[in-house]
Image (cartoon, rainbow, N blue to C red; front, top):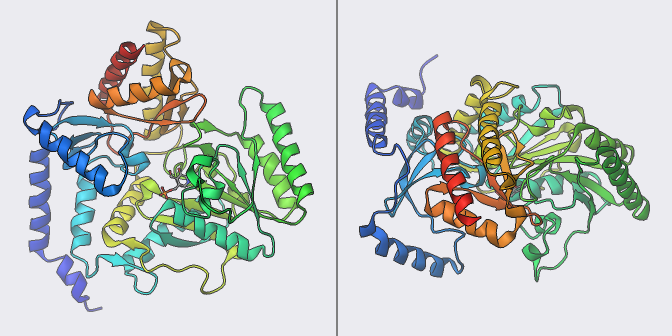
Length: 461
Ligand SMILES: Cc1ncc(COP(=O)(O)O)c(C=O)c1O
């Protein structure tokens, strides 16, 4: 077969040389980013001014004054004020490979040579097809019946698509079930599911949502009994009105609390008996447990009707079984992803397939154990300074100062200033969460960032 013009172009030796030159230059530049550095005093004023103007332009403040310079080295990131920090939140789970990872730079370089910047429903390249295929194969790995995949540009949009698919299939049912304290995004529809009144203040109610209490690990049996009772009561109160239950298997924004297989099975049995779709929202959990998907971690493969992924996958997706295939016209988007994001997503999914990431001794469990061991050492030295649960897999958390919101905020702000980036979750107690860059973080990074965490905990206490 004759080569396509595109194939000849991409295999031109000059392209290979240019790519290698860039990667060599990157490696040299990264040599100056090897540890935490304070801000450059000479940049302080212009940096603060830029932050101020940015807040003014976007019409609201920033959680912390973060403006990246555009270069990093794994878990380390350089900010535009010249400081270098450990990024343990990675854009709330997005930069799974860390900052300026050579594989991501290579993917972006190759993507920049493609004919279009964006891809969409009407015109997609073979790289989009490759990505959909990777998502479906990964989802089917342990026997789920998930068969179709639709790409989108945000987690909220992936959830919107999931909701529409479920509502259309189960029409005229219009109610939705979800867990208390869940987070599903912030569009008009999914902000109704997100269990936080502040995020939908002043918005009209467009969907009726009923909440089921999440798992309580302190009283597992009682918790299962109680949640099943609530679910059954809701179904009795609104017979044949629920189309779908949207389940976060590990609560993210809600506080990094994990569910349990028996708990989920008990609820899913009731949902299946009542023909209610089972939807797993894996926007935050994808790529963070002992399996690619958390539903695989909890062995719930056979029950998945619709699954959504986002964040670390760069391109978001709604994956569903054949029975839930939407009618033409229900789902479509001008953009389903930028070409750079699609190439990066393919490289990341390849790493999930080929790297030693999952399983009981994979990178995720190693990173989790390394953090927990440092947290336990802090606890031994200073009893009651922090408490668990410490999260699950690559979703790591602790509760400092008994979960006092004001102190947690002060802790996270001081931690940022001293070179470690974390983020809060949960409400009462307020907790500190980390979504470290699994693809690049090292044992040394974990040790050094935990030394800073310990020092700031003591300072605030
Ligand atoms: C569980 C869950 N669902 C949905 C979303 C919404 O994703 P996005 O912010 O990309 O719209 C998030 C984001 O934090 C999430 O954690």
